Amino acid sequence: MKKLIVLLLSISFVAAISADSYGQIMDSSPRDAAYDKTNTKDNEPIPYPYVREADVIWSKRIWRVIDLRQKLNQPFYYPKTPSNGRRNLMQVLMDALKPGTKGSLTAYDATAQTDEFEVPLTYREIMNKLEETDTIQLQRDTPPYDYYDTVIQKKFDPTEVKRFRIKEDWFFDKQRSVMEVRILGICPVRNDYDEKGVFRGREPLFWIYFPDARSVLAKAEVYSRFNGTNRATYDDVFFKRMFDSHIIKEENVYNRKITEYATGLDALIEARRVKKELFEFEQDLWEY
Image 1 (spheres, rainbow, N blue to C red):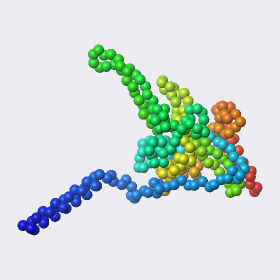
Image 2 (image 1 turned 120 degrees about the vertical axis):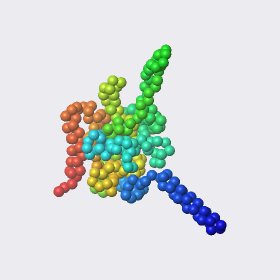
Image 3 (image 1 turned 90 degrees about the vertical axis):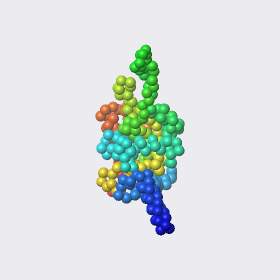
Image 4 (image 1 turned 180 degrees about the vertical axis):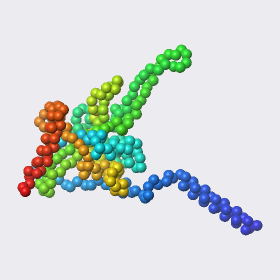
């Protein structure tokens, strides 16, 4: 009798352990990789070298546009939906703007045609601007078939952003004898259409102070075409200048963009002139 009781207790204990183990396996999703990826989660941005004002003998402020339709810039745009731990650049920024998010960012107003990070925006203010609300009339399908108003809200889609503006400072540090560039701000831009779908222009959404965003970008993977093991981060892409862009403005006494005094092919030639001057300035400092 005692042996029978011991046998029953043993079977019950084994069954309980098996059920518990089975429940743990079902509650956790399988690892979608051959190994655990932890490097990106613990990654930190590459620190900038310290620069003294007295060591800067020349500087110039430049504004650029990164067009995500360019082949080199496609890693900024894809994936359209989060996949395998990767998100597009706009989704990374939007997630970091949410209140309570670790490493939360602050957005600044861009509607006043300023990029000096003066007017901070709350997440609710940003979403009120990005999400469109429209009121339409619908007819009831039962008598007396009268009309009633209904509100339709269009959610913001990060893939609507196909351009980013960046503001950067180029300078020459005589202490280290190097020409350097530091990105100061990044601004997502989307196309603006009227009610009939006619293109009206490009709408800057908000500015983000780039040095604050580096800690967030350093933990966000970006697709690599050549090696899936050594994936870079968005901070690496910006730090190493692995993107294509064109200049839309250089600092000037009139504070005007290139398109305000040149159009079409002339604007393109003017942008290339500014780019060439940056390159030639550094070359002229050296004697071969």
